[in-house]
Image 1 (cartoon, rainbow, N blue to C red):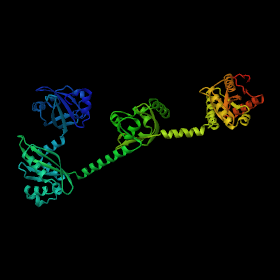
Image 2 (cartoon, helix red, strand yellow; image 1 turned 45 degrees about the horizontal axis):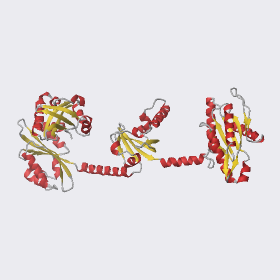
Image 3 (tube, one colour; image 1 turned 45 degrees about the vertical axis):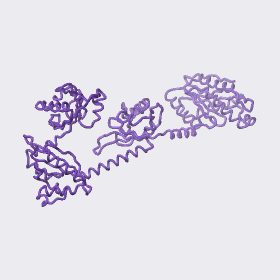
Image 4 (cartoon, rainbow, N blue to C red; image 1 turned 180 degrees about the horizontal axis):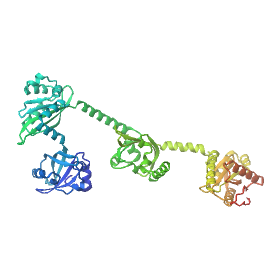
Length: 581
């Protein structure tokens, strides 16, 4: 695959590798050009991808090592086999030693067309090697202070020196150590779970003066786990003089690794079995986790979201902008989208908000999102954890409860209490903005006679039919309710006296034309309306209700099926005459 990849696909693949890696194009025996170096390699070299792309491989090495670079690249290409070497590079952080592994990349025909290089920072190992080589006294001090067991052997495997930690790790005495390798190594092998494999590995290293061992694990019969590292110190003639062995007790770290793996497994089980959506983002707001519940409820897969998308994909842009505007008003300055999303979470407090998620299929899902900031032990910001709960059923229950609390069950209009609350708010707005509102009280004429003649079921049918008829004549800005019994109330918003009178007359005429079918016949219905206006000097609904009620009483006394008004004059509102049917 690497033989063909290029452009963004190649960069994404290589950037996903967690170690410094670079890809080299091969166009001739000595023509090796860098195609791409991933972010880790860019960081090591202190150069950008653009600086490196197209450069000869030797260009990244110090001048004195350019020929060495070309030699190893040529060797890998010519032999078609992996090559490993070490080199010193100068980076912004100073000189760094890298162990470079070159691997040939072949095309379909088997020809080597590219070289893939990976680099491991071996600066510390190199420094330790030079310290051993040039400062033997310092090495001895380091041996004594080292938490690792250290053993130094000669080219024939004979023991030259060791520290106390080495003896402690294997339970050896000074007397054991004084008898040399023939005594010590059998005692060590006897403690190993697989002594034969360890013996073969050590013998192979002793036969290869330049060979190294990095991170070989030794399991002891006691259950402990040691890590074995070995390096030869090479003189100017490339002859191995001595070999240093490092033995490190990694039992606790291995236990920690197992505990971490178990914790990850537990976390995965929790995320997979949770009914709530559990989402996390990094400090760049890119998803880092997206559990099974989120996949099920939102229609996206974790593969589509993790590392690729941000929460903006799930949110209604209009709702986000409304929240941002509202937060800006609260803060007294323009708020960012991040602030609208996160609320109090950046301060460390859990933030709970109701949002509307947009599913992959475009449908909407109301959720309650509890957001918590994630930080490490030093308080560094890592991202956010969100737990989103589907509140569809809760909102439907709340809607039904609100409907029960605010709606008249028979007519489906607002009930008196809710109408009074909303009308009071509307009148306060009218007073603030100098609007003109009017109130109509409506009574069904001879309703008792309808109940007595046709029965209460027929009376209920008349109430429902009249309610629908009246509601249909009103504008969207107007609203009405069942006031009680056979009475209704309607608030006509931002109308002058003439407009209000025409609206009331339309209601009266619509009901007069209404016939309510019942028991094979029809029930004729008329209404009487009392109409009054709201004065800017008034601070409550009581006064206008009182005037409208008096007007309604007068309309019924005058013969019913008519509109009667009770106007209180205002400088900009003429007093119209009443109409009757």
